[in-house]
Image 1 (cartoon, rainbow, N blue to C red):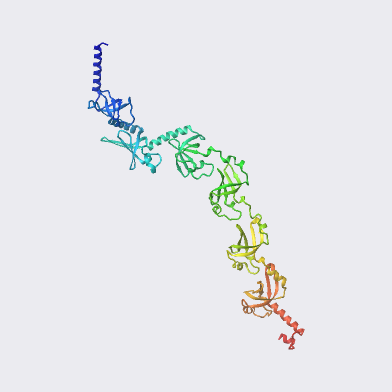
Image 2 (tube, one colour):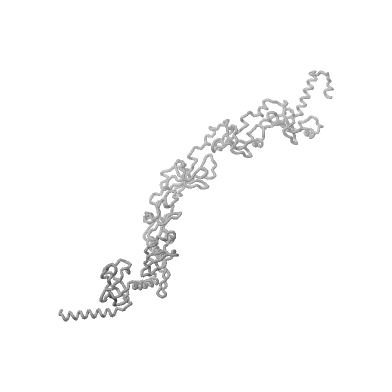
Length: 558
């Protein structure tokens, strides 16, 4: 190339530069390339005669030589070359992005920088600060730990946007963005995962019925019942918050967006081979897990829980509620009474694990056994006497004394008193034991029958009066009846007047007319006694017995 051609080329290049500079308008956006960086400035080649200087602080991200940067040309010539502003350019670019994001529902990237009343400040760059309400910060409420969101970088959707006189009013929502991403992730999950698949997740939160596990922007439920085949009561016993866990999918419900997860399905269902390990009447150990009005639940192994009905708790005690003899957490021996593996039910018995004390009660307390025990309760019919814990015997009112009636006998008994008695009847099958007090002594009715005969004289006192006669009590305590017809032999006498002359407590004598021990019936007669006495006196007279005055037969009847 000749010297002349070289000069011509330089002239042409200078003209092109001048033409480019001329075309650049002040206030327009231009793109420059980073050609130099120091501690204070970034040097940009913007196509002018010299580089433009941009304060390094205007770059929010790391910058390297060769990177492109958009700036606003404020002046082609300045003290240090072209005057540009990256800050103004960022605002213009961001404003354009805001309009697009608002109209086309595009997410904006921002950083939560400050907590203020009702929400947060979000820096989306270019000096623009948006407001993020507390209710829009997350999918679930986390009001107790709002500070944990400070410094969080995330994407946001515009909720409200307005611009007036150069002032931008911007309200954003992170919740809507998370929900949309969650729906996308969940849809992908339902499309690719099947029941029985193993997955991983992070424990997010707890409820009374289980734990929610984050599966990548959406939750699955690990129900308490799916944490263990055994009796699970606290979710925190099986998983910890923020713990990464491996789980099995046990239920998928795309329509309702529900995913059920399980820990226990990594192990075999213990009911599947129950019949191979247990038999009816086996005595086994178990732990009381729950008490109800109708019985107690006992876990015999993890995942196998049976019911001890309230009727199967005790041989001897009438249990009104299981808490009377059991406490949650107790280790007890129980017997297997029956089971249904398909329904996962097992019937257990607590009392069947011990000997039934009623089976040999007749050998322990045979008829004739004398006891000294405390009266437990007195009723209208008799009294209950506790022979030993849970074994009560009954003392009927008729078996207290030989002579008094049941009602008066019971008045002498009081709960808490100690008495002597004897076993008079034992029926193990009916769980019945009868006691008697009167049987400790001889039956006076039998003694009366053996010792006295018809017509013999008896002394006693009037114990009662009725329309049909008088009751007379003998020294033995036996009461007999003197019928009104047996008061006198005078057929013309006024019987009512004669009865009126007798009072309770009066001493009287009479003869035995009839003794019936089985019916406890004694008939007495004053008339018969007087007739016998008269005959005896007559006999003495006839035989001149004790007749010092020489009385005549006529005198006797006078």
